[in-house]
Image 1 (cartoon, one colour):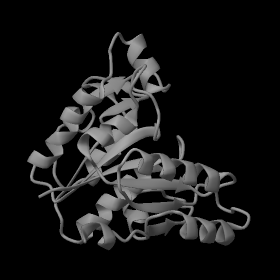
Image 2 (image 1 turned 90 degrees about the vertical axis):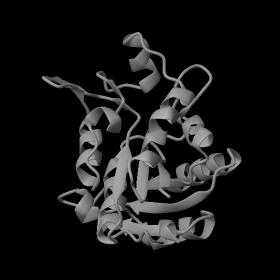
Image 3 (image 1 turned 135 degrees about the vertical axis):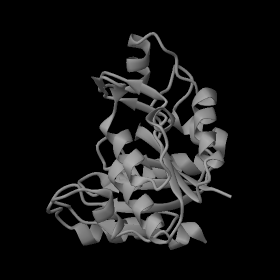
Image 4 (image 1 turned 30 degrees about the vertical axis):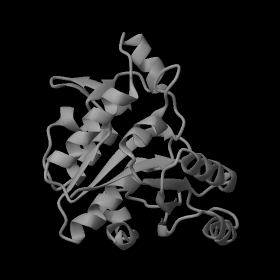
Length: 227
């Protein structure tokens, strides 16, 4: 049975891909077969093989199960803007039902541990009625929250956690990702978040000069997820 987790963040550019790849690396070290999907990626480069997104490519390379790019990133949109706007410009319509169907493929590829990476934050729209949260809700997937440790992170993290719980989904854990070399009062902010977030801290990832999944994975503990 595949353990599948939905990775969301407090905002865009908080390191979701880095942490998702780090979680995969940590699971790989446990000898687990791993897979990943980024169902929608906005911000793709056109090449001979079609549009490619760097985040999706990193997920594809991190996983131990080799999946074709189209399965890792079934909806690839060129402009690096809000996905629902990019889809509209491309004449496409995003829907939670269709994207959830793509994600269910993770349970048929033989993986023990898999991650679904969202885009932006929890409530980034898919269309005029649905958001990325509806993908996780449709799949009933436990959520991992990536918190960018910077000024404002407490409010952003607590609001996101409250929204996830309000949507009826379990928070499996959270990760403190240091996106700047020096955050004033880092320890005090971390202490507050540890006290107030209703889920375990899976790890503190320091500011990395080489931000790779393998490097991030050294600071992550997936034991709580495996149990």
